[in-house]
Amino acid sequence: MIPQPDRSEVLDRSDPDRQFAIAIARAFGGAIIFGLPLMMTMEMWQLGSAMPSARLALLITIWIPLLVGLSAVAGFEQTLRLKHDALDAFVAIAVGTVAATAILVLLGVLDSDVGFHEAVAMITLQALPGSMGALLASSQFGSREATGHRDGSGRRDTWGGEIFLMGVGANFLAFNVAPTEEIALLGLEMGPWHTVATVIVSLLLMHGFVYAVEFSGQASIPPGTPLVSVFVRYTVVGYVVVLALSTFMLWCFNRLAGLSIAEGLSLVIALGLPGAIGAAAARLIL
Image (cartoon, rainbow, N blue to C red; front, side, top):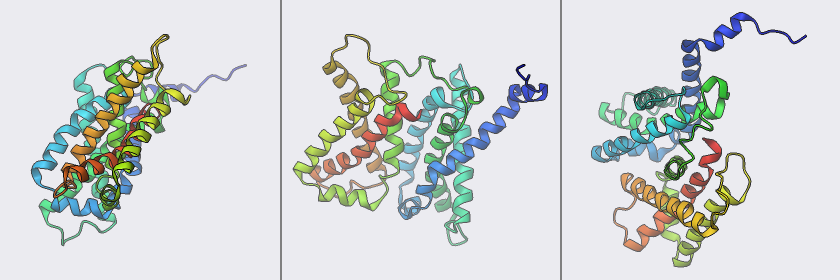
């Protein structure tokens, strides 16, 4: 005889308040796991005081719609309306802000020597990757039943949905590298052949990860679709998005100042390598 579930357990699982509380707790875990590397990175502490307010405001302005779109495919709860996805996004930002504040205080980065405006800027900058981790936590750490995971919803299976997911994956991975001094040095040390080779390898990795290697969650190709069409419409366009995001991040972090066009291009392409891998892996983690 199959044992019947206890009535109280059934009620608990169907309690929306309890499920939301679990989702918030999971979000805090995701914010810390995904944001901790940057919270312990010296360059991110320095950017809190050095980054111009206008650039930080622009970064936040672009980050919010990114979170809203991410909520549509991997939010705290299954949502059907834009306002619910927007609410998810702002909850994620709040979670990321609290998590960043707690960790920075715990590590002694935020103390009495840090001015108010500098502390606000530092927390805000650290809260951005944490907010993305908070949203991703529901798809990474929770069951489909508990989180309302949207597999099969159709939102991600359009051309625009695929490109958006690539942008989210690229943004997430490249953001962890862009503030560091190492990426700046790599860009300056790359010669023309290194730059060309990096572009080729990035494109091959993107296409191979998504369409050639049979990973779980990979995008499906309609029968009869020419390989060249798939490569151009998805891989090439996705890589252009990766480079655009890489350029924007480097500009926000003031990494392109004083560089020639060739040096700046090498730096963008160097950052585009982890961005391309993030874009390719987006289907696997969302």
